[in-house]
Length: 169
Image 1: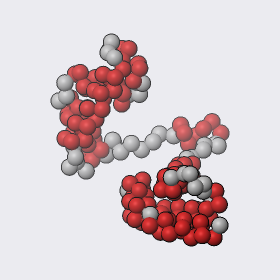
Image 2: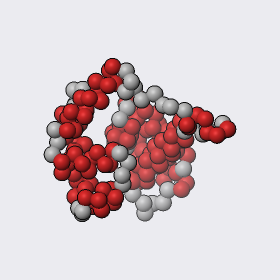
Image 3: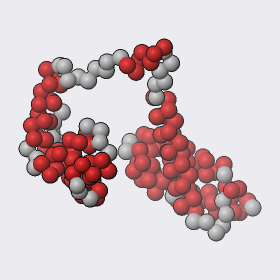
């Protein structure tokens, strides 16, 4: 049993650079990736007794890391969710500051609208409907297009908008 644990520890040490790269792809932040790698290493070390020899060790460790990342993400989202417990949902019904009333916000909106208006209708209409809150299926039905076509046009419109406004801040 002790020999198995030593072999697994050596394998885990050998995976550290791969684990860091995987963690970096998940977090896109070097410090968070280091933390995630360390947390996954500790979790793997403390759960060696649950590892079975017929399971891919690298896959097992990466699954642990992925699960930790997902759980941390969900925890962060839950902690940032505001639950309005006021009478008549005052906080939810309060006007939100969109930033469009400021000169900078108005300029931003005008510039984005200008770019969107330069798109051909076949891309602009489904994109604007999607931004307005229509579901893909509703857009496809209203425009008489296949669902895949609608999704593609919205995707290409979004990509083109990002390309055109990439230097915009």
